[in-house]
Structures are given as structure tokens and as C-alpha cells.
Amino acid sequence: MIRLFQEKDRQSLQQLFLEVRTKHFFWEDGASFELQDFDLQTQDEIILVAEDEKGILQGFLAIYEPDQFIHHLFIANDAQGKGIGKQLIDEAVKRFGTPLTLKCVSKNTAALQFYLKNNFYTVEEVDANPPYHLMRLE
Image (cartoon, rainbow, N blue to C red; front, side, top):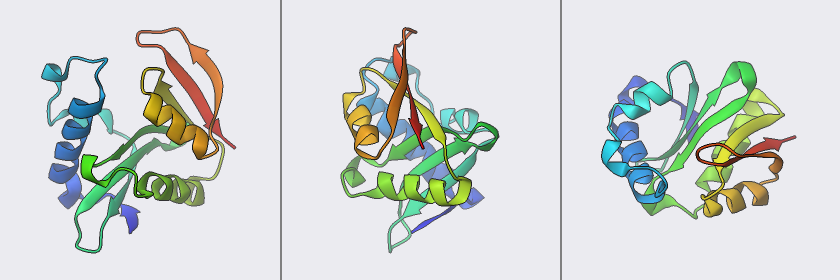
């Protein structure tokens, strides 16, 4: 089920955010990651939450609505590959419309493939630190 964030979700999402970043963000120093990063990095964003039939949080999508910019799409390590990311994107399209944009770090090849498979396309490859793809869904 996809629904809007509730304050009771905060602790679980902080942990999910930390665990996924620690496992997959190899281009960053994982030792600097903290639980509070979730709060700082989702401030002023609307958060959609995916939970299973037992009420366990499986992932979230955070969007900065004024720009229709997906800032975060995170799926729990043990829930990846089950269609949850697609469900979150589909719900974002229903709620916010298109176009939606996002940035995807170039080294994150699994995420790039996921977004391409879900009809995003690269608008621009940006030479930043780290390099990233600016992507769009029409």
C-alpha cells in the first residue's frame, strides 16, 4: 500500500535511509551517514510511503512539489526488486502529474537502469562531484 508519510513512520524511515545508503552509496563515505540525515534531506518535501500487509515500511519517495523533483526514492534492502519503486513512482504521477525530474548519480548503474526501464530519460549528463544524470519522466 502506498500512502502519505505520518510522523509515526519517522524512526523506521530514518533507519531504512541509513541502511540503504550505507549498502549502496559506495561513492560516499558511509561513516559520515547518520539517522538524522533523513530529516535534513526530506525537509519541506512530501513523502510517499510503501508498506506491506503487516504494516512494515518497505520504502519511500520524497518529492519537492514546487519543482516536481523526486529527491529520494529508497527501497529497503530486503524489498528491492519487488516492484515497490514502480508503485511509488506511479503514485507520484497520480498525485503530482508529469513531468517529474530527478538526479541519479552516474555510478549508480542499478538505479539508472531502473529509471530508464520506468520511462525516465536522461536530459543531461552533468559533470559534477559526483557526476550525475538529470532525468525526466513525461
